[in-house]
Image (cartoon, rainbow, N blue to C red; front, top):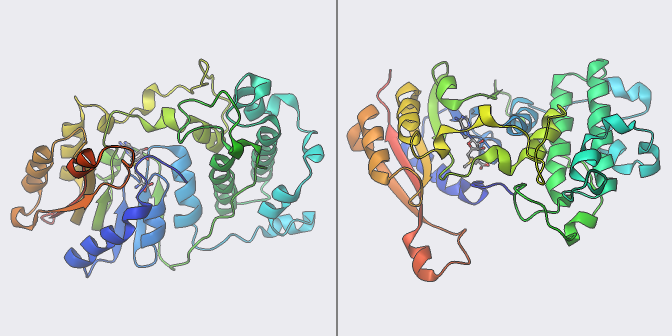
Length: 345
Ligand SMILES: C[S@@+](CC[C@H](N)C(=O)[O-])C[C@H]1O[C@@H](n2cnc3c(N)ncnc32)[C@H](O)[C@@H]1O
């Protein structure tokens, strides 16, 4: 999934830093998990704990990290459904027209019928139909928690493929882009089995770290002032399907209670300091940017204060994302992996 700060391209670098500094580690916590690609990748080797304040991120984690195998959906078999992803994807749109109007939140909010162009009317109905059906199955105990989160994750993961946006849901295009004409399909997520007690959370990482402990803590906070929820509100609503009171042309859901201190210049240093202080992990690895709200000097002093000073190390990775900027600017910006070994609490 396209997501601001997604670390798909950095996985091998993160692994190198962990292998160099923590070869004996058995557990890894991905405290700002986002798309969950980091957790999914490291699940091959570690028992994973993952977390994010976004609910749709939690759903993606819960489906592929805490779930340790593809769910069986055995209670759907008597209904003639062996593969619910295929069931929705092969269903004719005319069969979905039976869905009552008041249950069509996507169509009535994000599609032309609701005066907006995030997705077309037909795809909106496909999303509404699948999401309502999954909710009904769950309420009638036809699917359990593992199956429920798996199917919602497949719905969420499928939406960006047909969204009429340029990267985020801060706004939609005024003309239909090619992508919006494709048929919406649930995206069949793979689930890797590692046989371990992987756990997922949906809370403020600073608070969660007071209660959990382990070997490696990977921290990938927001770098700048762009809050995540307003940029991904459509996916959050697909995951929650809570009929929020949306506002304005872009149909933002309320997010006052969901602002991250890591996006606020006035609060980020204190939040980061508390996070490192709370962490009961032996090895800490931070992803950050030389372009970020916190200065490298701030980061260094906080990590050295709460960690073992002479283990502090900065690994610089040339920025690959600012492709349109000048070469000069590219050279100035660096993506950083910063390591410190923490004194055991
Ligand atoms: C840079 S992104 C993480 C990207 C992720 N590593 C990936 O590869 O997809 C930062 C994430 O931090 C989350 N976040 C921000 N503040 C948080 C907080 N206080 N506690 C937990 N998660 C938070 C955001 O919702 C966002 O998903």
